[in-house]
Length: 307
Image (cartoon, rainbow, N blue to C red; front, side, top):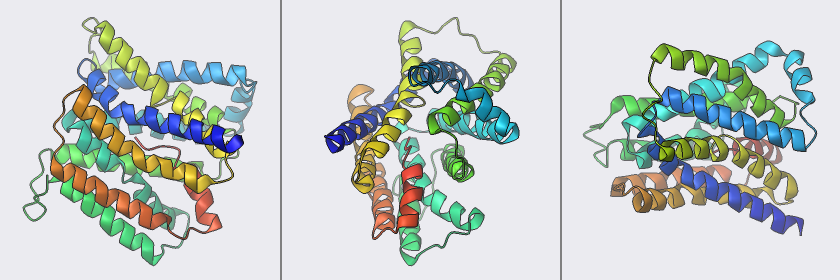
């Protein structure tokens, strides 16, 4: 019964994450990336506070933060603040199909950064995985003109890659965090919101032109990209005896996402994007082969996101 529940929770998380690239584009049609971050973070924090209240974890918040305030301040500045501003800006500059596929290479970035910062050994298959995945990124970014290296938006591609560094860095900093993961994520939002509001005021962009559709889209992003879905995914990993099976569900997400982008907002999916994404996923699958116990723990953590 538990396995069926885990599968249901995992599939729900993957399907919700598959919709966010479309929701990003709909939201960015009306909000600036900083406005979007601010509103979505507030929605997300409220949703996570309700979840923490319902599960009796709310009282852990002050104690957890005060146990290491500078650490949680740093985590909150990295994610959600810097990560999402940079990711949303990448989505603003690139077709969503490209931004989402490039962002998907973050799991490979994590392997390289774990070697540098945690002293973890890079296996031969990790190098093969890196080659496949970053070749996929180049194919997507150049729309297949790999030798010409003509990028539609070099800044957009650079920001999408930078977002993978920030997300991987966040998980490396989080690796030794013993606090409840939902409490930790909520603290990140509570730390980031004052900074986000300050940046919104500094930017001076108006909210007066936002339509009901825009408010609905940004609320959806706050709930299902940044908040509730993370809890569903963690619950799926906790409920299962077969972590690999649940973790592998994530590979379906970018392909479902491309279908939704094409059908809902009519975005043209370039054949090179599909080919590049297949290369990235091939790299990720190679990376998972014959995974050791130590690696599996890292993957349980790292698979907690894919946007």
